[in-house]
Image (cartoon, rainbow, N blue to C red):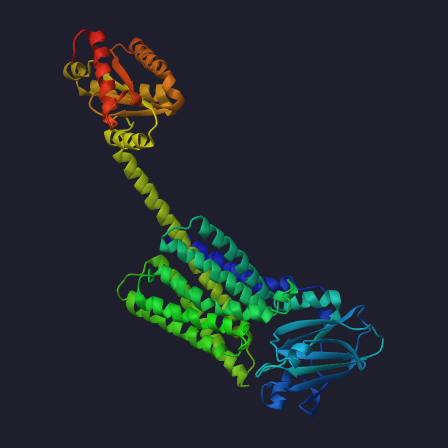
Length: 559
């Protein structure tokens, strides 16, 4: 088992390395043709003019983040378009309306009506096609900020051919795109598998909620890095999808933890999980009711997530672990959850450092949550693998014990317990059937004169004859020392005399092949409809009575 887990760990590490290193091998050939317009900007910020500004350093110049109502105009008077057949500029807008001008002529604008009506405006990557020109073009971008804190730092626009800028953006975020795509596909597949095997077992329910969590996280990554709109038309709702998917993480984390540790019966868990889910759902509802924008009270959700993390640490690390109630497979998944929780804390710290203007988020702070999510995926896969392995092992062991409990030790056909269970079920169905009562002739004489080994041989050979003659057509069992029974149902009832003749013929054949024993059996049968009593044993007794009459005919006297 340890070796298999080690192989899974190695596979996981190799997968993450391929995601990290592999992006260098999928770099678009036209990547270098795209120009980043970072330098040479003239900026008008609420009337103040700044010249020769680097787009990415504007925050350091103005000394603060943007506020609602700010008007920022970016002007660049020497943008070369002559190398592009279909020149396209790409820039990010955050909670803002904008106007774009080329050579003092309006090219495109978006969200002006929403800004005027103070409606919600999200974050977008904007692709705007410019007019081709062999001369340097003048580009002016006017931004009308609709939210406080919309811009903490500014990302420089890019310009290139239309067919080049989209691959450029995807490649620039390839790490996040690949992980997000994996999480969405893996989450959907894992969810389907979990639903297919869904039961009341907490482990399966945990896998189902984990799959939903991975799907939600993958969606969040795509929307957070403005990649979702590159593949599907969200009708301007990409940022709402980003926050909704983010807000679903806490409720799903509670359900994963609750199912994994069987907390669902604890009142304290239901209190924390209810409040933890109520907060994000309330924020979402308030947004769509038009009362408050979904991003406005992000800090409340972040506090909610911190409460979840604290609750998880207390319940698992301070209560369950000291009580030694956490299995090895669960501990692997718990480690994945802890890593994910710590990565959220790390990410939030850098988020507020960026808001305060101390530092723009570094690459590791952006990558840490996706990487931590992959760690949780690994923990979930190991836990699921161990659960499935243990379940199949228990099921196989149970089946083996059940088989032994219902199997005759010598003949390996069903025993009396299995016969009684089978007859109870058959009787409850109310259908007609035939019981053949069989008694071996001369078994006691064989045991007394030739020894019990020969008697066992007699029994074993007769069991083989029954299996060969009846097979899957009916039910066969040994219910006593020399007593056997056959039960026929459905279309096979009409062949009862053929089966009896076949058994007798097979015994005669054995007698000719091996004369150390004389093998014969008395048989009698009865139908269910012949019995007036309300139990299956009455049918057997009637068949047994006819068997003894057959024995009298064969031997002249009753045994």
